[in-house]
Image (cartoon, rainbow, N blue to C red; front, side, top):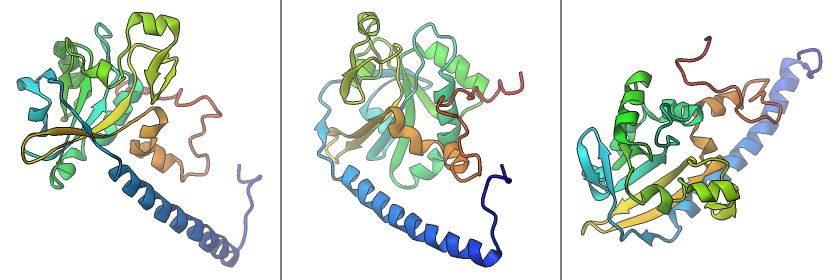
Length: 234
């Protein structure tokens, strides 16, 4: 790889790096504007009552805020009877598991929600050694209402509403992130949702891979190389 790549003096490298730095700063400013636009998005009132099962028993959506006003839910791909969670969602969980304690200091709670019954989630949770709160929406409309679970006929027809358009979901469960706000009177609002590559920025390892010489090195195949963290080397 080094044979094909330009190699220059320290002086020329510094000049090239400063030129790139200007682009990076412009991107940072653009990213800040995009983040502000996300926060300025109109809110949707959440009127339906949702119930979840987790390590603390059954809880409502409002109770998941745990005394805070902001809630992030990671829609974790784990369908009933799967036995294991999606390896890609498992990789994302490795990224967010340790940061929730920091989010808590900014009036934010974060949890994961999946369609599978809680007993299946709990067993996999123990295997992976994670600490985040994981809840099951099994028996409720939550996953279907937020367009991350699909009925068999939708999968068969290759036509379902996902990522804000009608498309082939590819599988019965899909990934995403949704954000909610609870006002002082307890009223709930959906403020943001993102799906598919919209969650790309939340993967810590991808951000590091993007700065190494080979990059993601996936050759157009996507994250084919990803395994659960206890499966590498097997």
